[in-house]
Length: 443
Image 1: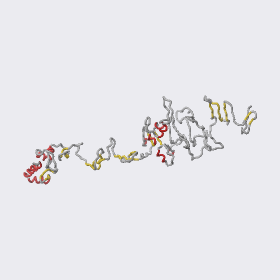
Image 2: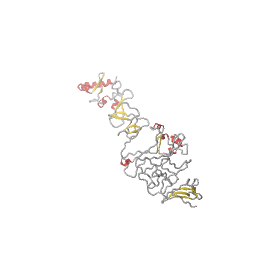
Image 3: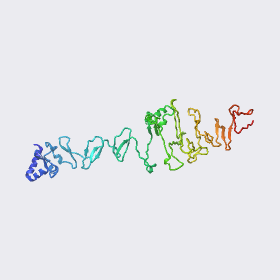
Image 4: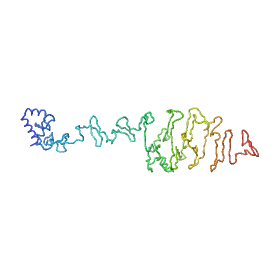
């Protein structure tokens, strides 16, 4: 005999003993299947607690509330409080599940959940977050971006978006303790064409500068020993002026200065030669330019230009530093304490594997004439031009003293080349030697 028919018989027997009560329960608390009372509808007096003691000895297998051909309730009579009922793996019945937490709240899902993705909450529903969860931090969403874009928080929150250029809004402050934002990049940074360099001790992937210097005595040090490496790249051919672009630009202006007799610097190079055990060299700034062939034009190791849009201020050895405009200023001592020792030279011209055709060349029309004087070289009185022998001794000199005398000092003879300029025999040859104030010979 079917189990549910037994259940119906028991219920009907109960109804026949109390027809009024049975009628009330059939209308309020029970449902029917093929005109038989089979299961409580979840409210009222007929519950698992009241039904199990009555029917638990009859039913001993799984229960299908739709098709009651195999419907045990004995499992319900031994259920653990607080655990949910779920569909059984087989048999079309129900079984008792477990909970991951300690509450009786159950979540609903919007859409489809993807295995491995993180879950977000939307209006109380679980929804796929569109990607794996983050490890630590505040989580959040990474929006779609393009290759090589940098990520930033476009607004307060947990969403990261892609942007081509970092947007660091200016705070209007300079020092960090005044509220300024300080961006710090440690170790080394490669930019532009320099990104090709792998930065290894012995580079395998080389930037174009390292590929060139590796064939010379310089090796890989110019690029691979730089904290900040900036190189132009093939895309620089698209520079609007067609000049191949510029690797690095430093610029400053005095518009924001708040004190006089001081000013900003476009670029600063600084080297402290402070090794205490090795005889090291040190360059505050180094520039090199190599002319590779005869097709290219002029090549300059360094050019310094100035532009004067103010009043003209002629410079003399006794008038310096007052509104003058100087292309290059060579100084010793740095203007700081303690007082340093004298520096070796303001300028040295060296054979570093090759010679110059000339030491100092003044291009025609490069020096303006002032008061009938064209000062190619301006010296204060008593400053000498000296000639040395290979032992370091001065052998000849020329200088002007404080009395307007031009002094020629020589350890040998004073030779004036010409066609018999001055001789004891013929005197002065006025065609080849002239003196505005005369000359006295001692023969």
